[in-house]
Length: 586
Ligand code: ASP
Image 1: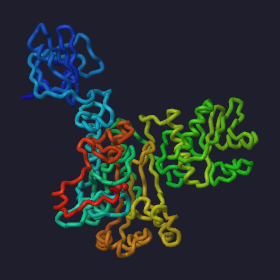
Image 2: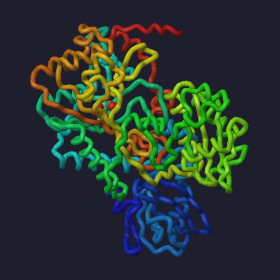
Image 3: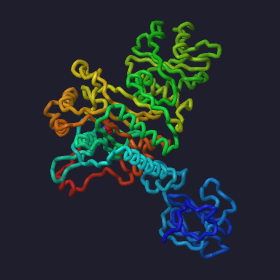
Image 4: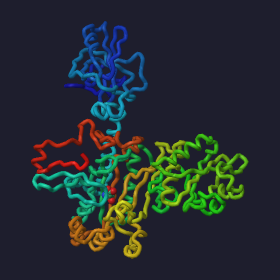
């Protein structure tokens, strides 16, 4: 038997027992005639003591242990004289009687402790060592518990877990595909699924009624903190449902997760906000509602007073930061620099402080009388000590997005984005389409299988841009943690959708014929949603990036630096695939 107990298990009540532990040497400390070894495994750390006076040979042997050696130690559990309250095992130590080195270790490239000296690149290259660290391992444990709870909840609601293939056909709508060449079909390629969207819809046509899958999805997109080229969705689909049925069931799942994983009771229904309101009041389809600072439009008040920037703007909007009138000139200048950064792109920022006497002091005082500034103050219901920040521009949507960035930054600066506070909402009534400048055509905002709102169907021909969809996103703390829609189940409507999206009937048939044909054989009304598992875990773990809740993530250039992938193929493999590599940019 390698061990009788784990390194996280023994307590004062075990004192006197003879035990065998196995694990990794985290630290060795020599003090007088004693050697102290911190022995670590997944479950914790236990202190082992080698005493020169008890067994000089054994103590000598322990002096040769290095960091990350794998050892087995037999000894008796004893109460410690100096206890360590920070460790669950901190009341005891093991007085060693036997030691065997199961495997030696080279000196690890970084310290494997909570505060490591390893940089990002190094930790990723040696990810298997990084994962020995408590801080990273506990995220994987959390992830495991969450998937167990998801399965438990969905099973209790009658969902079947069904696997769908990873080698599918390429669909050009949406993001770019990762493709896989087929040896048996030379010159032809599979694609890895961006999501099992059409397959889960086919499962509804099959009568499976309620499906889920915790599934890898692949999208060849530029990476950000909350994006990876492969990520995991909790993918779900249901038949004979309306939007409210889905929202209620999956809100139930969110509450179940909050309760079971974080011990938080969310007893109120989640707020619902239309996409149009989210954009108007927060400049984002995923507003962070942990704090206020709702936008106020100021065109009526601020135009027509001779301040050219505002007079010529199509949109003027502001936020009111409570208690921030104490911001110094320097702080305000750096906020202005912040919104002028190319990623945000504002031209400038106007501010107005509410003074202790109620007067308003602004950066554009020479254009505005105190009368007008008082109207400004009233529009925000601002109080002495508050700070109003205003942006303007000639494109309302762009300016709102800039104001959104400013609002989030102010939220950060004022400490209003507490990671232990959760603001959950549904954003509903998304537009069906959005215009793509790049493609010069309408694109589906969610995906082409989304059902338009019944009352907007007549607009499909006359004013497609005004059509709203039965689509919904769940947003928590400004993160889109899930989204879905009611689907089209009528082949004629589906064909029409492809037509609006610029597909010829032949192209639509070629790419999505399997789906439209299936709809001719009794497709039930259906809808669904997918939750982003990585985002949920990082939200619950309080992480800024999804990377640390993924065992082996990719870096920002989509590389796995540990496996050194992607990499060129051997000539032999290329020959088997009948492929030749001829890079355009050499
Ligand atoms: N397949 C969609 C997505 O990946 C989610 C859904 O509509 O169910 O975003």
